[in-house]
Image 1: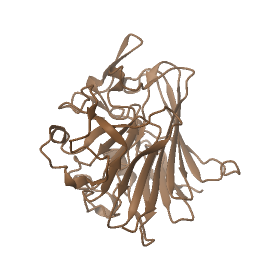
Image 2 (image 1 turned 180 degrees about the vertical axis):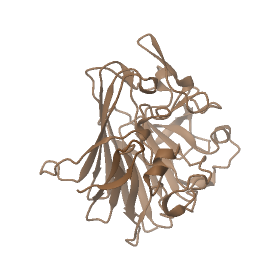
Image 3 (image 1 turned 135 degrees about the horizontal axis):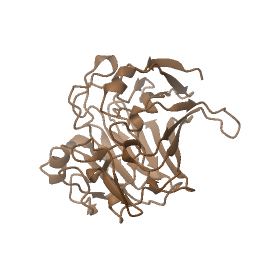
Image 4 (image 1 turned 90 degrees about the vertical axis):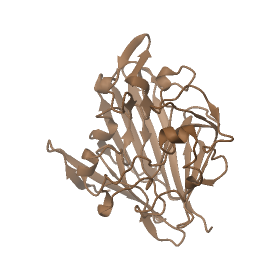
Length: 357
């Protein structure tokens, strides 16, 4: 795999792009900046391939943009109340970058740094094309304790799955909860909203939020709410309901409590997304306890992306696998703590297929 130059940072460092492809008609392109997925071309039911992830045509968009398009975010994906948490009796203050709260690693999170890329050798034991990105986050970066080294490996399978494996270590107790922040639009037409996409989520409850979109600490049953995707439903069917949680999030921007959490390696189906027009299906598998479904409510046409398209409200959606938001302040939530001698591991798979109707 020969990389290409995607752009040059202000300090003169080059940012390279890498493309994986398979024989089933799928291609995936990644850049070293943010370890971001910049393009994901997937066949529709007629065999026509289109890009299904929002992003930019040039590096400048990723450097200047604040939407996290396609990036690995962290150290902590999602929100931490007030940017504060206590670990082993010591209080830490993180960068506040989302109102009064900390979001997706802060102002210079994993999405705003240059990762080191490595192309693993294809062997009999590892026959699939992959690309690995590594980043070392120094002690104190954005307020986080400990020096953390994280490796993220993207693998493209012959059955059109993009597999993401994370592996991280630390030299001091810290918290770690990275996630992948691609915005999907399975129509391949980024002028169209995702409201007709049909979504199912393998969850019976969610974590309701307050006005700052911080979890209240309770687990609320989905039954009887517009957040109930236990059976497949069009996203636009109830997104405008006068329901307090939808009003607070200006749509869907919540964490679903996934069934069957068994820790690292316990990969199971988490969600399925279907676009009736193209026939494209995306099935999400993960070993994480939570899934943040964000319906692109804050896209406002100010981000001008690929082919000069201004991304309007709800023209892309995110399905972010994760530990629950604000877990460091909620002892009853799954833990995001990582200590020396432990290895953080996570696996998430976005599997693509088609359906005739």
